[in-house]
Length: 330
Image (cartoon, rainbow, N blue to C red; front, side, top):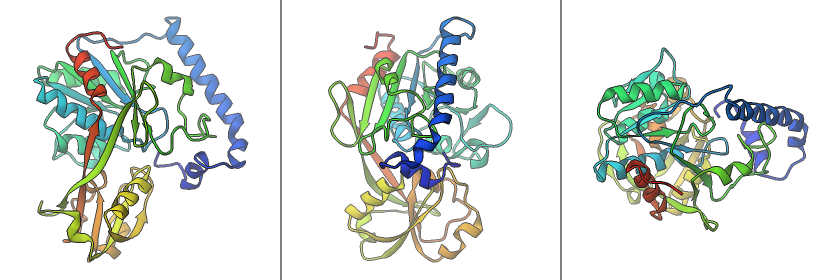
């Protein structure tokens, strides 16, 4: 997602003729998806299954739906119910050899921002490898794992799975309904008919869908861990720095809390440099937890991360618990 121009992303979610020029490329992409599906269905390519349940939490669209906060929420629910989950991720933007066992102290350039956020949010094994099968094999070596959650990986067909969860942005939906690059879709909308659970993040869920809402919670100083509330920032002129796929949701949530701020946007997964941030060292800066993991050595004294709280209607949690317990999932 980090290499996709913002102008193209906006065109996916607003009526425009410009994306029609990309339809020939989208057609080729459609052929590629169909050919890959046929090769797996015919047995030319094989699916790798494991002895523990695999739950994939993914997107049909490119980035920004809220899948990682949902995955963290589900992992915490599993732990609360006595299970021992492991988590695997591609580790977008990570550099070096694989697999990588991610801890709260792992360098973000080795893990990627989302896996490091996961490792700092919950004390369970986290492994990064672009090959999800290798990642699962590695995470199972870390201990008595009884269920594996995959952060993304819906399109990683080689990885067998017992449960597929797709998160949809309740505001943006599926955009113009076109496949990449003319639209935001990684697969046809018909793919939703084959998944086990569709979670709508915000808005009104359609019949058969689960609901998810996120809200802003405690504010934590990036340097020293002091906690505060958003109320204390209402009388300040803040700078909000983002490098996420859909910053508008975060901006709107802050505005709804009565905050006034300057917006600084980078592309999704952008790795900050000192040059990027040097003009804001003495400012009051707010950012997401995902961006904060990339700023541990760059943050000024008045830089804060805003924690995100997740609520679901319970249906998606129940489906994951059923999968963990070996029960059938509808």
